[in-house]
Amino acid sequence: MPKSKRNKIVSLSKTKKKGREHKETIVNAIREAAESYNSIYVFSFENMRNLKFKEFREQLKPTSRFFLGSNKVIQVALGRSASDEIRPGLYKVSKLLRGDAGVFLTNMPREEVESLFNKFEETDFARTGSIATEKVELLEGPLDQFTHEMEPFLRKQGMPVRLNKGVVELVSDFVVCGEGKPLSPESARILRLLGIKMASFRLHLICRWSPEDFELYKEALDESDVESA
Image 1 (cartoon, rainbow, N blue to C red):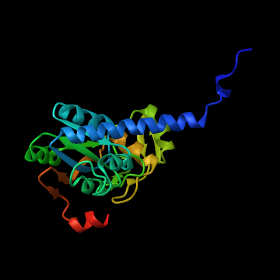
Image 2 (tube, helix red, strand yellow):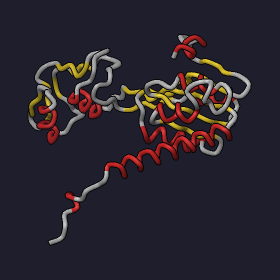
Image 3 (tube, one colour):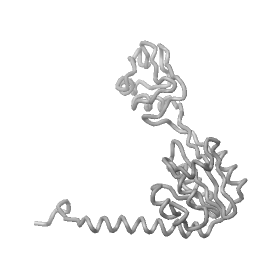
Image 4 (cartoon, rainbow, N blue to C red):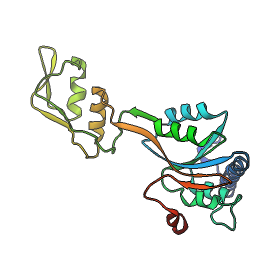
């Protein structure tokens, strides 16, 4: 009888070693890039959309490189303090890697980088848990945008609907979402059906490092924030 692959024993030491080797590969790649590019930026992101980010990254690939994922791994690569930084002043970059953030290494002029990041914005359908940017309410009456086949699905989303001579009809006013409130799974699905996009994928520059200087972009931050981080 053939052995089941499900019962195959995997050594934990091997999996740990593989994970460690992967991190070491990333650390080495970041350090090599840090020596090759003239400027390093920390950026934060909101409402990440992987496909849109991949397109943006490919657009800048000839002159730049992105790293994001584990902030701790990036910090180790760049250096967490002045004593272990790989280039003078890079520990300040590490200090500002918090939350949803990454690093952008480039040879592009500063003005061009700032323009690209400031202009970058992609709207998309909001996901469950996202905060509604506006109140959406449907009024009692026929819903011509929906076919009669969708009536059972709409009812499952909590909408008070019925079929009236083959037309989907809302029997009472219905609030899909309230401004400033988290979206439920049902609200997110209904907004998608209505074609209403509430999510905005944006990138925000936090700081810029170069061999000559260090600059903070966020008004709420100053050098003391870096030192105390």
